[in-house]
Image (cartoon, rainbow, N blue to C red; front, side):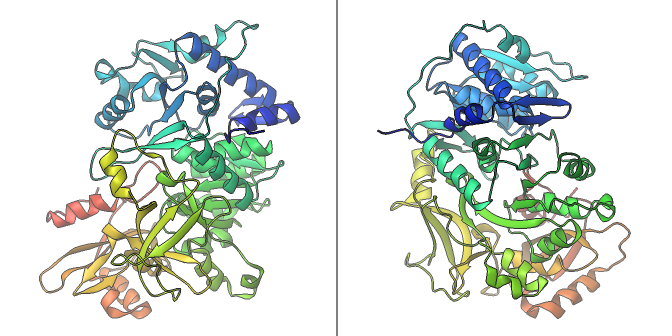
Length: 531
């Protein structure tokens, strides 16, 4: 009596037990689970009638709307593979990804039509399906989404497809910061078990109302697209991150759970309206994507009343492999101590497999002393099948049965892992290792600092030294020497940044990660231009 592990089965369960429950809220639209199920089935049948079969790839370029949710279920229940596209990439990157992915069709939001118009003649796409948006005209030669799914006759049944849990469910592309983006092959099984971790460790329940602040294209919304449906909870869609609107939605829909990168947390706590709003639902917010500063976690809990949950992973691991388990004994600590603990990446989740920190020279596990530095490695249920059509890169990342993350970390006596830096971001000054994230953590405690990125810059004497690039709070009056003195007062002098630049904005990815490689390129090329 074997049943394949696939998150698609949770849609069946939700429709069976919660047919009249509101499944999706998207601005002024409401869909029950029964209605949502019907729309996804219509999409599946329409795709099947248009020639999409099991194993075919369908690219999707949509914001966090009900259409995006429908695509995850409608495409994948055919046994086809969904290719979620980052709509903030350049046309050149999108051309590469769509061609490399072997996608046969593209479902695209009209707002992003111009990007596709410029490259459509270079794409292998057999059919374009366009989600129409008021005020957005598109010259793409395709069919409107609603027209596409409405052509399905009422009596046509969904094609029966046998799902192998080890077959690819989604093909997710990395950001490609130093080379062409890599296609990460994630299976039905890995998505199922990652979503099970989401359900269990983020305490998702039937009455939850989940706000999709995290882009659904990013590691499949970290699994929220599946986990919220599994519980029969409610999805609230958000077309773009808009802090004032998010704060309104907290109250309007009684949001109880959300996810986002630290930069989104920072945007919320620094939104002027945050000081005037009282969020009564005490929402849980999972954060990942970059190591969050303890000071930022403290602000989120104090100003907004968010119950912050730190998780960690990579697209290549579906993505969860660590979470910060909160223990009763931590409650007696001061708020500052609690925030410091919450800034750690934490311990293995229940369903992902094994994660540890190993010495880079001999591969042994580092001492649990909070001092010995090593690389985080993982194996088990959620690690990717490999990089699509790239056996060499796959062999580099997966060695002797372990996936090597590229993140440097320490392990504390209680087993909690804490990232010190990305291998490429670690600053080596005069032979000393200096963590850029440690410096950032100190600077985030400064009242005049809104955002900060610390990188290495060339130095004749030491080889390289830390430099802080800072976005100040509105109206802040602080000098370079003030900031340097502050860091020297709060950490070892050799770790303190030797120079400061103040800028209006920091370069980020679509998911809110700081793009330090862009800063390094500018400064190592003797250029100070950031904006």
